[in-house]
Image (cartoon, rainbow, N blue to C red; front, side, top):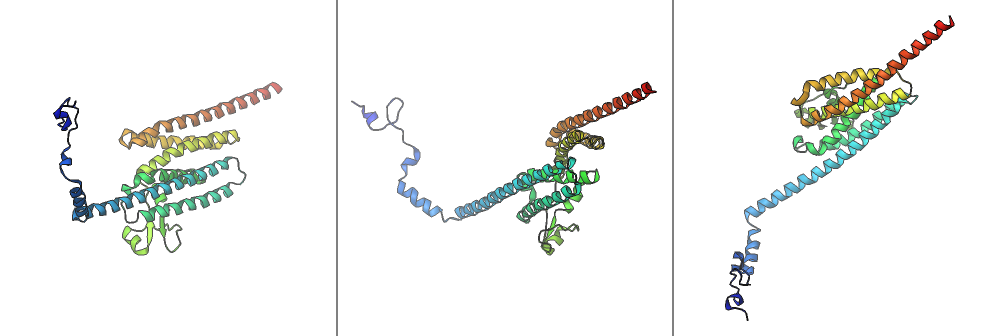
Length: 287
C-alpha cells in the first residue's frame, strides 16, 4: 500500500514521489502562444539580425581559412622548387618558374584582400597568418637566392597592391587607402609579426640549402649563408623577450640552424686546410 503522501506526489524526502518544477505550473498552451508572440518582438528581431551577421562573419572566416591553406600549399611548392637550384644546371629557368608560382600565390592573396576590403584585417588575422608567413618565407628565399640579401617588409607590401586595370597583376606604385578606394585597387599589408615569423622560418630553409650545397660540391654558398644567418640572429637577439611570444619561440630554432651551418663551414674549412697541407707535404717530399 502506498502512503497517501506518496500517492499524491508530495515530493518530500523519502516519499517516493516527484517534485513538481516551477514552470510546470504554467500550461503548455500558454507557453507556446507566448513564444509565437515573442518571435515578432523587437528584441527577437534584433537577435535574428545578430544571428545573420555572425553567420556571415563565420562564413567569411572559413573562406579565409581555405584561402590561407591554398597560399601555404603553393608557397611550400615554390620553396621546394627553389631548393632544386643547388643541383640544377640552369638557375634562371628555376627562378622564372618560381616567379610564375609566386604570381599564382598573389592571386590568392588578392582574393583575401577582396574579402577584407570592408573589414578590419586584425579581426580575421588569425585565419590568414599561417599563409602570410609561408608567403614571406617563399618570397624572402627567392630574394636571397637572387641578391644574397634580405627583402624588406615594405618591398613585400608593394607587391601586394592589386588593381582592376591589370586584372589582378601587381601594381607596385604605392598609394593611400583613399586613393585605393577611388581607383578600385586592393591591398593587403603584411604585419610586422608575420614578417618576423616568416624570416625566422627562412633560416631553416637556408640551412637546408647550405647542406645541399655542401653535398653538391659548392663551397662558397655555405659561407655566404653562414654570414647571413649570423646577421639575422643578431637582429632577432636585439628583439629578445620584448617581442611577440612566437618570435621568442623560434629564436631557439634559428640558433640551431645557425649552429648546423657553422658546423658545415667548419668541416669544409678543416678539410680544405688538411688537403692543402697534405699537398704541400707531398711536394716537399718529391723535392
